[in-house]
Length: 222
Image 1 (cartoon, rainbow, N blue to C red):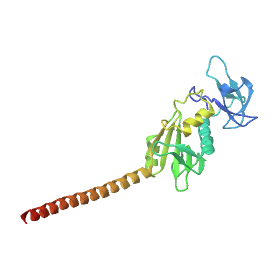
Image 2 (tube, helix red, strand yellow):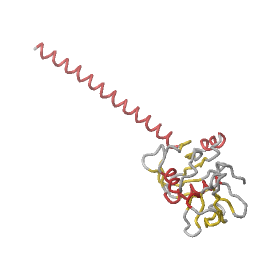
Image 3 (cartoon, rainbow, N blue to C red):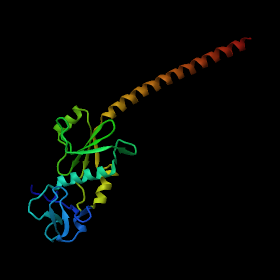
Image 4 (tube, rainbow, N blue to C red):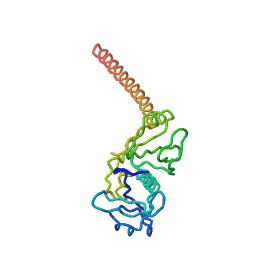
């Protein structure tokens, strides 16, 4: 697949250390000593003047830069087992990470598995969740979060990418969360209960005032 300027691969794996490196951190050409995160083939670092710096397969066959970002996201999520979400207090905890697994009629980018449920993670680089996919997610009541990497700075390092994905919430949108409806229903029930208690209290206060008023009148008559 041909890579566009937005999905040029700028991340690779250092063969000697196994670490994820940015193209800015390695030597030019074959001396970078890197392999593709997706397919494992050798790469060269293209660091010329005409185009944005990026990695290119020595064999000529290219992998999709967007897919590589998905794999990086999975690697980051596997290593952390927690992430900040806009609708959660503190960090959301999960036990397992599954990539590109079909879930009924939906194929999410990543699935986070908790002890009781699943959360679908969609990594958006050049394409976002379609209306059709969103309707399926909502129809099957899946928890789903879309992470927007479309404006991701191509010069960001792996550590910066990790911080953006795990710690920041401004690039995440909770597109569906079945627990929120339940929370609203619970809150509504609690609201009615509190109103009921307030009504009882006000009635009691009114009755007490009326009783005290009658008592004072009887004393005055004496």
